[in-house]
Amino acid sequence: MIENSLQDQVVVLTGAAGGIGSAIARTFHQLGTRMVLADYDWQSVSRLASSLDPEGTRVLSVAYDASKPSDADGVVAACIDRFGHIDHLVPAAAIFETQPFATMTDDQWRRTISINLDGVFYICRRSIPHIRPGGTIVTIASSAAHEGCSSEHVHYGASKGGVLTFTKSLAKELAPNIRVNTVSPGTIDTPMVAELLRRSREKWLAVTPAGRFGTGEEVADAVAFLCSNASSYITGQTIHVNGGSYMGG
Image (cartoon, rainbow, N blue to C red; front, top):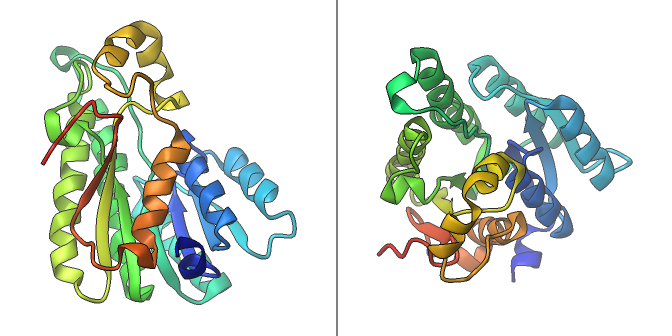
């Protein structure tokens, strides 16, 4: 059972203040884990941690810029200092910015790649020596990693494609001690895509057989499954959480 296998396990979650990240944090808290919640938005992640664990014994919040290797060092050090080890890593920090390719600057490209892809490398590289055998890494890719992104988001699609192949390669290298999988959300109704949905809500609904957009909690459930013993024979795989908008093999 998921509940039994995750009780008292130690989870490092980046991007914890975001729509999907905060849903993952709430789900893991309900399952009895201990957590380090890291996010660039220090005030929001601190409020989230306090709301989950007012006494501060099971949930620790850390300020974190995914594009900085030193911040990844700080997150891992804080976790080891408080909990002594890591069982599960969920690098969920990401940005989704709109910019047509014809006018995309080098800085805009670099910013998205540095947060969405480099950041996954930094936190994984520093966490892996501390992940106990039987632990997991669950990355967050996107439907964009499989079918290309919507127009004006080439940098986002490229970054998530990198996360997808990074995950598969890492799964082979870390087996059998650590399982590595990814969750690829489709259109999830969170603040990150609020502007996209404001401009083209009906367009995205029309290509979603489920007839609605997903929730952060539905993504969180998939992440919890991949961290749990219920998925003990699953590694190097992708779970699509998209209401049928992409039906990949």
